[in-house]
Length: 263
Image (cartoon, rainbow, N blue to C red; front, side, top):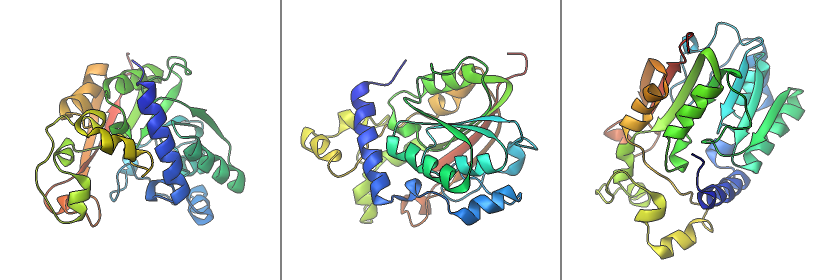
């Protein structure tokens, strides 16, 4: 099921603004990073601080058809392209896609681009990709289960899904209050950004470049992958630098999942 257009439009505008402001997840990689990747020296992040283990990836990226799912911003996908993968970047934000185009042109890399809703991959045929890389981003849609179902559909049998996502516990607290050192439970879970906030707050979100966010249960984030047909083969937790809540618990999770070869 596709995401509500109002939510998509709001978050598209917000991420375009964040890209203009140089938010950390919108800053493209530099030429040195791409050059090192071309020489076999590389790291990939799906969460803030811990690199994805290299044994989560294929031994070689040569000829691998890779989908960067909600992975615009010119950060991970150019590295994959420099490693030899056949990369398609899929993102809801035109500005984030433009960042990948800029890096590709600057570094003479070949990549494809598609704008759309991560919960609706109907532009791709079944069994198209060998690998899907999906960094922290599904907190910007209300229902994550269609993402897993669509990822399973477009992956080839034996294909790999690598995902990063937010620990739902983080949404118990108000983000602005955490920045002020206040850790007080404010929201019930699951958190729906367009329902928990007051009308005045909602009206100011886009102007202040605040996206609509949604928590998802671990049952949906992890169990949802298995329900879609995936077999989980790896998992780790991560923290946010200089984050109050990270002093007490991990706030991000990364998983590796396989589409069975018999699927």
